[in-house]
Length: 131
Image (cartoon, rainbow, N blue to C red; front, side, top):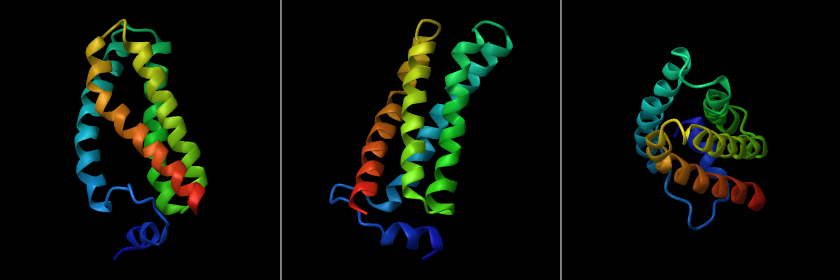
C-alpha cells in the first residue's frame, strides 16, 4: 500500500463512501469529457467567439481541480481539500451557466462531472466533519 492509500485508509469515512478503486475509472471518464469540452471552450476563446468572462470559470475550475490531489494526498490536509473541492463545484456551476447560451452541449456533457463533484463535495465535507 503506498502512502496515498495508507493516508486515505486511515481516515474515518461514512458507510456510503465508495471504495477507493472506483475513483480512478470515474475520473478517467470525467477527464475525457472535461478535455473535450474545456479544449473547445478555450479554442473558442482563442478564436474570439466567446468572451474572456465565459472562459474564466473554466480556467479557475481546472486549476482548483488539479490542486485537489496534491492538497488532499500530498499535504494530507483534508480541510484545505474541502475548501478546494467547494471551489471546484462553485466554478463548475459558474462555468456551465456561463457557457450555456453559447454551447448548450458543453453544459450537458459536463453533467456527469457536476454530479460526481457534487457527490465528492458532500463526501469530503463529511470526512472533514467526522475526522
